[in-house]
Image (cartoon, rainbow, N blue to C red; front, top):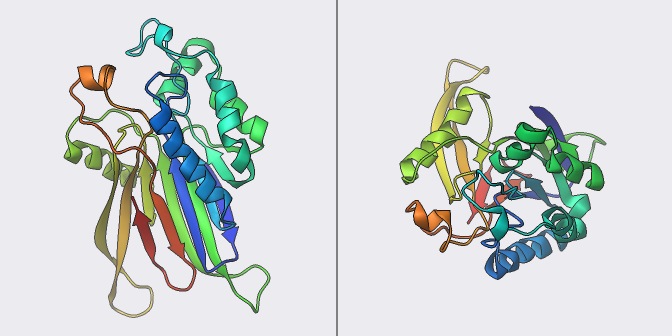
Amino acid sequence: MKYIEKSVDDDVAYLVPISDLHIGDKSFSKNGRRKLNGYINWVKERDNAFVFLGGDIFNVAGRQTLTSPFDSSSDEYELAIDLFEPIKDKIIGAIEGNHEFRMIDEFGYSPTSLLCKHFNIVYARWSAIIRFKVGKRKDSDNRYRQNYFVYYHHLAGGGRRTGSKINKLEDLREIVEGMDVYIGGHTHQLSAHPKEIFYPSIQGKRFERRRIWFVNSGSYYDWGDNYSEQKMYSPPKLGSPRIRFDGKKHDVHISL
């Protein structure tokens, strides 16, 4: 687990978590690439927008995996560099997914780690806590009006039903408490679920109410003629969530 801080002077900051591209697989098709390029261009045009790579960027197919190496491209690493080069300075960091773990488990080699070194970004390995400091105070050089905490993990396991995927996300709260947003990949679902909780205030004998978000970071893996059809998974909506952090008041807004 790595702790990462990102300061944004503007009154608004955006995070676009990108995961489950499966670059190299034939199902990372024109639709997925077109969708991804749309997000990359959107981030590139905004100084206050950033990306975190949430695993399964690469496909890493083998003879014993659900996807065959004969249906995969051999230039997935080079393609990843080409895709993210336009926003290399906007990528906060990256974590591993279960597909990259195949290479780590078999050969002790991580394409994610090499990608991070190439772009000079944080390699967080399995999970990351990201602190966003948003809305710089005019009377201070290093104070910000709002602080937000995000925990990102690729997740493991899961099921076909929506409820099981949400349950996996909520399990992240058993690892790290106090986050504003919990993000997971792996399920290929694009969704956001709020949860209201109470916590005791340190100022007076009362309780405060706050909202937690559980976010599935989506995918760019087309459905059909692959294991998703074979295993009876429902077709996903391609893309990523856009998470908006307000710098004037403590408020998280998520667009899907």
